[in-house]
Length: 289
Image (cartoon, rainbow, N blue to C red; front, side, top):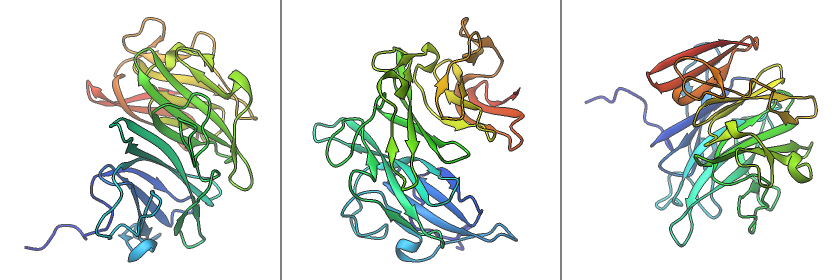
């Protein structure tokens, strides 16, 4: 029997997607393995194809030989973002500690002009909540859930959602050589329970994150619906007074329908609309910015 689709490598448990800025590649992460499939996109037809070897799939784990190797490192890749300049790709990698706890990190890849990916090594190539070797840490980092970059590529945002009373967004400055740094003190992050970050109760169970194309707003999926943040030219974030969240059940948020158990969000290219998907009641909520 003929298979309905072309068979690809690294697509088991396909999870998240990201297109290169020029539209020539589609990158796909896997919930089954810490892999990124690299699919070439035909600009005329939109058809996808995949090269063999590491040109078609890479593993976000040190020491792995490739996606087709007999033994791939355990874990999963649950989020991905491509820098607007097309030079780097950032992947959220989930693994497991020796004592059975979930551990997450952000891995950085260099992207070639042909769309190939090369995992960056050393302390400049990753971030880890535990501040351990070989990755540095960052304020507000716990279980990393979402990653997004600003349109100018100078800011990278990571969300962490770890309980109904906690959740955070960490702010990183991206330098010309893909270096990631944070501001000092509490300016480095916002968190539902404050702590080492500035407080923003709307960020409970922070998940997916996106930045508006005009660079003025950041939106985060949360336990309550969507947290709304203002962004300035430096990349700093603040919660707008009286409009820090939208929800269909949280009394302290702006009331809206169709925002229970939110699953995805996107801002239109003209920055005029925000779209949010949810499991309950199921559908897409439409907002005008």
